[in-house]
Length: 393
Image (cartoon, helix red, strand yellow):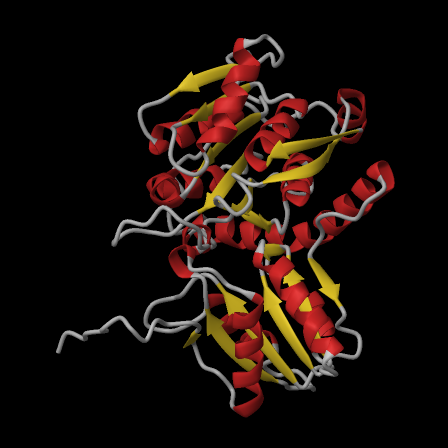
């Protein structure tokens, strides 16, 4: 392995290149562009033997990798925000066809109004497409998750696409020291893709045929059952990764100082690093606080989350997305996890960081202080008092 001070996007591109994708298709959109730009350079330099397809839209990019994956080759694309939404129709098809595609999503806010900065509304909107979703805290984890994503997706017990989510700009454009493995190490961890089924004129098959009411529901049942089984494969892959590379990365969840915590914050992505700083300061002040990082959002690891949280007095779910008309989507799912369970805890929902608004250590401390006084229900953190907020009657 080689440690490099490298931009997050380029670290991901190098890791994807080591995974030897045979077809890459993408359309440039900020802030994911550097990932596919670097991959195109690897192909142009002859360092990566792959077909790089320039397309006219994200819909086309998703369609190209769908078709390529159906022929039995390893594929990759990356996108963000409106680009991911433009892919949505194809994302459902990729999952329904059980194609082990890997996609990097550089999380970005959704328009309107136009905003190119980070939150997680884009990938959360795609949570029901049938894709496995993994969220990275750091650039090291983002790179590691891409490698693990291929192994999970191509596992014949799974055969589902995987979306690796990383916060736009906060990770994609940040320089960190990243430990990148050698080609030999990646080849040992990730064997060549051997599809169970593929489009082949010598052995014709039909993919995605009409399923009328007599059998369509069974296809959804099988997808639901398989995504549930993927939980074990995700954990198994993280364990194999740790054994091969000497560091824990990936898996379902990760806990930081939660063993004796009365208050546990729950979050996904890069904000977890800031929350850990807040936890350290609060503990130094005598408060028993911890943080639970949700790495795997789909399939939802409800049993692992329940076991990690059930001993707390108060759980605060801090998220960079909102289900308009309801509240925090992750908070809603965690509340559902505690239904009909023997132990209940107070669960607060906090919306923060939308459109790239900074979430500081002080912001997190304020959220904890507010939750000590009352259970928060979709509380917007750090709203500006100087902006006049008008409502349409």
